[in-house]
Image 1 (cartoon, rainbow, N blue to C red):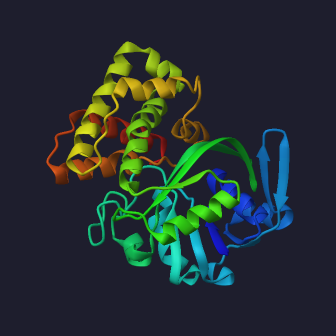
Image 2: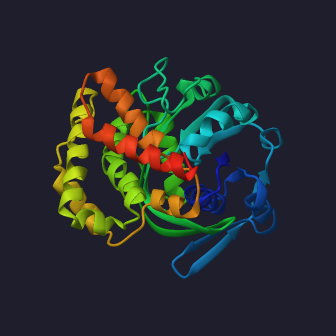
Length: 318
């Protein structure tokens, strides 16, 4: 199978290396130091004490890689509006597009209902046909210690499903490809719920840790901050109930899972420390837009978004 990877960072590098090792024809769209590293050394994957290298095709030019059977988008959501229109040479009429993004994707509300908070000019929706999308959620953790190198911390599950719901043969087929390559993938008939459920935890811990420069354990250990976290989660839960993504778990139970991960730095905190652009719109602006459409007031989500975007703007990273 011809599989394209757009964004050979931590998740893209992990999947690209596993799929190449599984015998698939992997092509990576990259640039700069990442492109140079992949061209020289292939994709390097570290899993515990084991390191593997996989030679793959790579280029900064989508036309040089050509149409793919499946195209994995593993970039930061804020880069996609500018990037998506350039991907046409890699997207044929039968190409399946798998956006493995944090937060709420542009297609979440359905065909013809773009989320302007993450696709302000409609460029993504115009470039990527809705009927060629498979929704994805990645539960795992990996780091990119240097260009072209991925260090896998843990891989729990990759959910894949149809944006409109229900199970399909094409979703099952992609899941089979991933499982055969050693990726813990599962087909789901409720991909929108899985996206909303993951957001439910990420939309608080990421921006609050970025604001406070605190690891996740310290955020949860402060009773006042923890109370704010639960208030934001309660609003998001109410929105989910209105849009067909009901969450039965309590905020306290969800945060107990986060607490088990210990004193970790969220990805947004790492981006703040490194001076990189933050993925704020997909985590907070899009849920706010959905809440407005659903008629659910979200004063705490509003406050968190306002504070986080002001911090980002002040640092030049939003």
